[in-house]
Image (cartoon, rainbow, N blue to C red; front, side, top):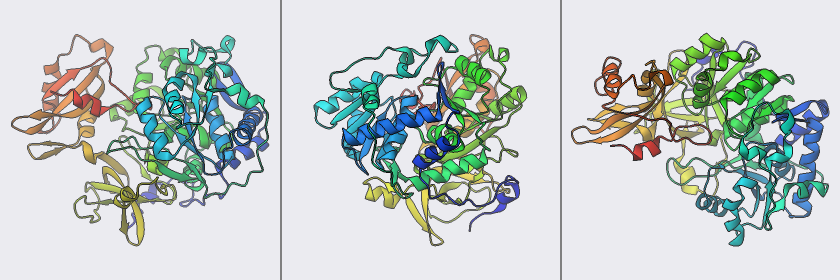
Length: 551
């Protein structure tokens, strides 16, 4: 049965249901341009661009894609670049033609790209120049017909930049004999055919990270993306005066929706960062009076660890939140003590184009996914029997809602296995183990695949990590399984120490402290100190990479 306990804590200013507009993502931009033509759409390393300038470049690129590259409705286009004005311009230009954006992680290697291109039937690409060498083999193999190459330095103003910008941004424009320069595509000034987009047009295919096998393309329409675009707009109280710090990678669904699509729907201003830099972020918040910042826990931990943070005026911030990985409670408490803001955590997946759950801004709980978002039916089921579970029972989260993807692209068997029928509805099985409290708030237990089986006891790494963060010496922690002759598996913790504890705290100190904090079968038997962790470009810790090095 659908739970409604959470409605008691629903933000008072918001309705319980939300009618998703039948307009398209491209029309969101079009309407913001009409309303705010001369307003700044984005700041980028010293340069600023109005909505009218932004829109004109979208139109010119769309015209080139249609008239010279013959891109048509439903064509899949590879978008392979880091956060930049060109990423956003390309995204909307592709949608302008009713073609489909396939945004791929810039950290992908050539072999990965070949898989995506073949899997999705892609033959056109728009890439950042620093990534060109990764895609040129695909052109030589006739998998890609055309590659438009963008240089980020075309959109900067070095004289007015706040601080030293990343080298990838300041790098001069390069020319490649087998690539089409970005400026050529824009300067042809072609006009695209009349726009006839519909809400059910396929719009974007983000790929899963491949944590449970090969990556899978998640088919989203304008309508499924619009559900979270508009939902975010209302939930986070965005306005045309909002200034969003855009740090999450835009190929990632959370960065795309929260740091680009929703602010553009509102007519807000973006402050775009190509690479994460805590000093630049603090400076940008002060300079541009940023009001909203959606991030990931690793970014926030690094930001708060900056010894120079107190030198910046970041009082303009009104909302800080994020998802992707649970924020340790100790970090959330530190944030509130130092800045006076509660971290608004949410939960979602590529399959749901970001959030299915949000914490109410005025009643957020730490280490909590929040409550189901607009019109989301979220249930918890027993992984073995499929039986629906109740309050404080751990099981797999399943969701039904307007933002749930249409299907995995060309994956019939995966589509069948990823869904379940319940009460006459089709639910998506998330693969995440959660529990729900009496008030209808959901809490992550862990990924189903990540559980450690220690002598038959279930150990959830996220829970152990949360406790480790309470130790004053711990800056970051990642818990994995390690082989054990007696227990089968045991618990290993990789830890990054805070600078002022390095050399002062020993491995055994952490282990002994842990014994007093958690059950005997949970505490880490092995601890290894590290200076850094491998992470995805969105900031998630690559626990599998660490687990490969387990002992």
